[in-house]
Length: 66
Image (cartoon, rainbow, N blue to C red):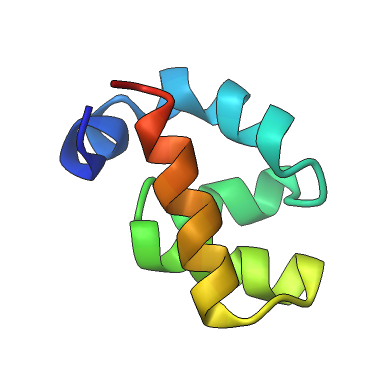
């Protein structure tokens, strides 16, 4: 599943995202609205990681859907 598919199924995928990144709030999920760059930014903010690390985490997350 590529990110376009994840974004299109955001409401279904959001539960898995919540399991993976528990520090992201419900309000954050509304703002992210399935946008990959928004998710990466929120991971950086909530977890205090560099952009590259956040991108790696999101890439691994995407890979779980293949």
